[in-house]
Length: 479
Image 1: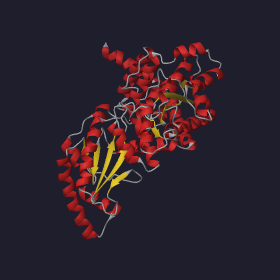
Image 2 (image 1 turned 180 degrees about the vertical axis):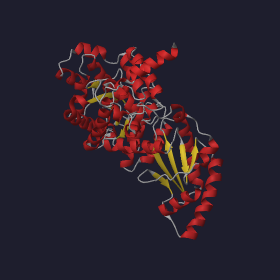
Image 3 (image 1 turned 90 degrees about the vertical axis):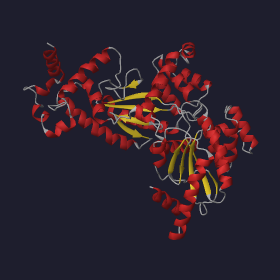
């Protein structure tokens, strides 16, 4: 009986695909359509049918099976029909200027495509945006009165970009919300949990910055031009039409397209601790570019160390003492470049990183760097202002400057580079491209550095290289 029940379920779930009366039948079995619609008369038909049964049961129970819905939409604010042929899930930060541009693009596309496009919002507040979480909570409070999207529109369209509590009230009044209900709803446990779930999903999906879009499961990173998103939507509309013509129910198009097009990031792989010996054998060219540098000039350096670090990380603080000794011992041969990797588990790491970027703009990165690590037990806004004053940086303008788009972009670029390199923790170093995970001892550093000084010295003489050309040549040799 179990076999017959499954066959019946499979036939029902495949819909008009196998119906002799369907005008789509000839196309349904074509090799071209099979490549796009894997459930259609293919070896996976039975598996796909099982997924349909599971999807209907899951949705009926209000659940979202991560194996079936890697980019879920249930429970999140959405604009558009649930059965729209194209769904864009956007991970955004309400304080991020790039996310604002992405929002403007989405609004233009909604105006163009109407009911054919659904937009789903996921919260991804970045750790270095101090008003991102409170603003997300305020938006969810407005959502209790059915005005989530209107509140988001108001925040992104605000000309002054202010995000204080009085600004939330101002937006609430403009939207004619019940202010008492709005205030009472602010910070509800369920809203905090909703944001936490979105952030956890962002980590699982490998989201590295905001905005990040998933267009029917296809990842698009950054505030890309509106026309680029439009071109992708057109392609998805054509594919969705072929699906519905083949007998797929409109409300099942989304999960099928996501299943087809999404390349998942396995969370156990993403969070796995690399084997130290394997990590030491990894060699990557990591550009210095405009990163803060101390030690030898590029023209003199034989060894380049690129550090990815977090100002709230205790291991990173311990490594600074070792690095100081390394630079002193090998003066004239070593240059150290700093790149930011504030970890989500450290609530003030992003703020500290932003303060250091502001200091770097005034040529004061390393004094601020030392202050942050020396006093990492207190990285509050007041403390950051005190650090600024102590090194000769204008403390009155510090917090405002920390929120500037250029500061955010600098940190995001470093984080994106870290993710591209597969870095999974701090500190992580690249010594002439050789990857070292964790905080090595001075002796471990010294052994590798002396080997690299000898190698680079030989290449300098043999090939007549120096500066960045020598650095690139040494990294290539180490491969």
